[in-house]
Image (cartoon, rainbow over all chains, first blue to last red; front, top):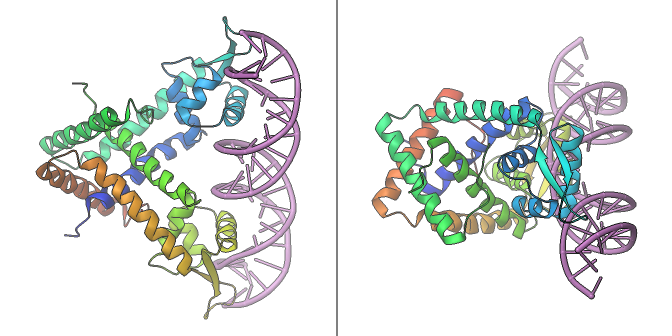
Length: 149
Length: 149
DNA sequence: TATTGTTATACTCTATAACTATA
DNA sequence: TATAGTTATAGAGTATAACAATA
């Protein structure tokens, strides 16, 4: 059997998983970053500033990102009630529908990927991955990267 | 303990791994796609056409990608000896140096990530991931996605 | 005729710097 | 003065369509 190092294996797996997400998003004509945006907004209503932090982007990049998403009817800017300089960004129902469908397709992809493993091994994998993520989050603070969707 | 589903866990892990690669590449002013390009060229000297297939890009996108890489001294176009319409693309020594350093830093990142697991668990993870990748490659043909570097 | 690669064009995504309007 | 957000600008990355050169 071809031996794969831990590093190579995780790297290849990450390409596989990201590729699946990108493909499923593309089916609905959204990019990976737009998908991440929608995912982040699923349970938040941040300011542009906060969004920039959440996505690790410059504020001017967020302006463009939200402009395009708003033009497509996926998000709306709501004036902040407490600061007249500031806007809050929130999802539209259209976007909620969209991410629900993208998520479902993506989850099916990943489920199919791991379906080749017998159930006990699958459980073992899930456990090991969870331990990695928990240890990483503990070491680096709550990591934003999360929230696929 | 927070329970994480298999799908969510793999998705989050993939963001973590890709983020590390992207960060390390950025330290040397190369993008993720340029890094993938260099990785693919490490053991190949493909035509533009073949490169497009390997990277899942349109041929016109590859023209631009190679233009920019060539301008930076990372690759060269060599006339094909057998077809005067065609060029072969190959790495320069500069690029080999670059990917060696990016790879080393990235591998250290991933090694640090998995270092929290005891050795036997780490071995178990590697084995499970390898089995996933092998099964996937068998089902989908040799998958190009591979070749992190 | 078909294939290889480039060019023209258009759009997304990103950052830096300068700006406006609040605070 | 400092902060929130936008605009102007520049560049990477991507695709489609039309094209030139070669097969």
